[in-house]
Image 1 (cartoon, rainbow, N blue to C red):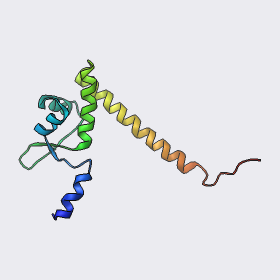
Image 2: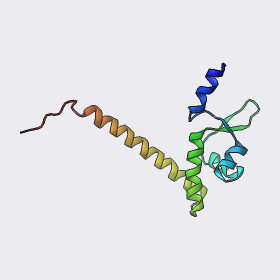
Image 3: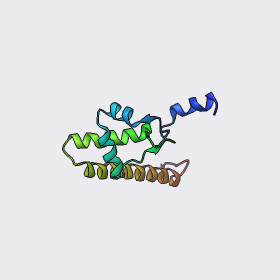
Image 4: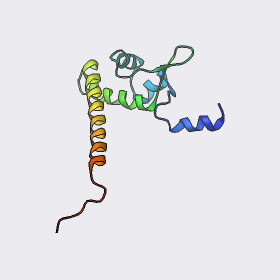
Length: 112
C-alpha cells in the first residue's frame, strides 16, 4: 500500500478506521452499547487481524441515530429496528427517484 492509497481512504465512509474505544468516545456512549447494537445486527464491525472491532464513519452515524432513540427511552432492540427501517425507506426513496428520472422524457414539451 502506498501513501496515496492511504490518503484515499480518509474520504471513504466505509473504511473501518475507528477502534471500539474511539468509536464509543466519539458517540459519547459505552463499548457495551456498541456491542449491543452489533448483537441486534444494526451494524457489523469489521475485525482487525487481532480480532478487534473496527468501525466506519457510516456505522458510527447509524449507531448515533440508535443512541438518539435510546436516549429518548426506546429499547436498544427497538431502536435498532427503527434505524434499519429508516435506512430501508431512504434507500427505497432513492431508487424510486432514479426510476422516475429514468422514466421522465428528456425534453418535455409544453402544450400551448
